[in-house]
Length: 540
Image 1 (cartoon, rainbow, N blue to C red):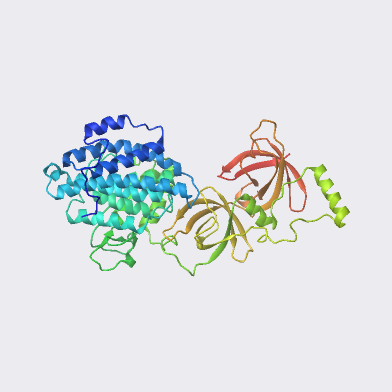
Image 2: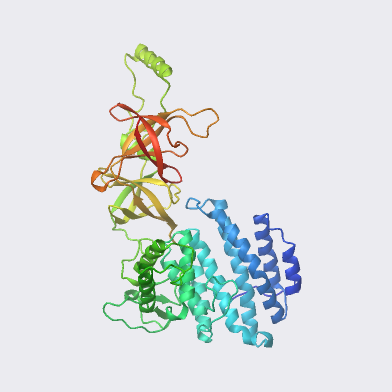
């Protein structure tokens, strides 16, 4: 069925049955995550090579599940918020996470092979074994997706081949109880498979917190809303089916791209669409998320917004994303990341820290004596010559409130969610200031991002302020941006400051491009990103 490393009489695992495994796990030190995760990978790999009876192998794999899940959950937090593409050492962490999931799947695959070869102890456990295999294969895919990476072709091939194998043996629809399932109910291989496919399709709209909520909803709705069939039908006005090729290397795609191949399968979206719309109506009528069967992790307002986003993603016709289908003819914009780069582009010169008045006067006097004038240190150079080079990005969407962009080059600056960026029209005439919402690395190693724009046309300015001795606040001078008031929208003016500059009631002075100065008092923090803080202010 699947190529597994052959068993070896020389294998020396730390455990050989459920009892010795449980004892070994009780002594595993979980305080050092790197060591614990590496030890689990090594010992489970060694256990998988060991020749054992089927019953002992299955019971031991079941005994491992809880500890593996705990370690993997904690270990994966090391990648939360990391800039993409990951650095080499960070990518090795991702491969280690995937490696442990693979080791778990390999253990169950060996059990499944034994069951199909006639092992009497495992003959009645084939549905459970199939469930565990799909679960851990899906976890491998999800680990890449949660880290912001599109899985390689080989991961997709294996996932589809596994499901096709289980479907051919007729065990893909049997519900199996999983004590660690978030839905708390029996789930079939088909539901797990469809859930993984749909989560992949929603990867570009979900935050990490929303990911777990949506995944639990799908598993909870199960076979009543999720089907994978070799045929489909369509009616005008209904949610269009989605297709997947069991012999392919991709996730779901629109039905218009389906072929007549025997390996083609279809997910009917009408039942899922009805489920989402019913839940939305119940919430709008005043039911709590718990009463609507949606759990208690999110508020009603957040649930309604998430349900709407999922419906648009899964149940409504839409153009394929640049992340899935790159296009050479797409329009382009320029993008630069960070507050200092935005300041330089708007001011047409890099930020220079303001010297104290005595030092500035002394330097100016020396320049007058030497050159007959005060020198402009940046006026003779373009921003490009000074190293401020915006990157070129392709446009999937570029509206008033948000954008979806794909970087044309494989190499470039690493980016992360909640980072400040400036999006400039191709001709350099218009600039919009925004915050990155989501970052993903495509299978072609391009960066794909969503951007939420901040209101108003930003102005570049320099802020100055002092901090008390021992304070954690930064002092001196720094680049900043002024977002003007939008009277019609009742949005007051605000400042974009570097992190660690804000404190309520702090007094600052800013200098505008016309060299006029204004003293201000900071009010409250509006939003805080990874490299900036947007704050309110009033004249001092």
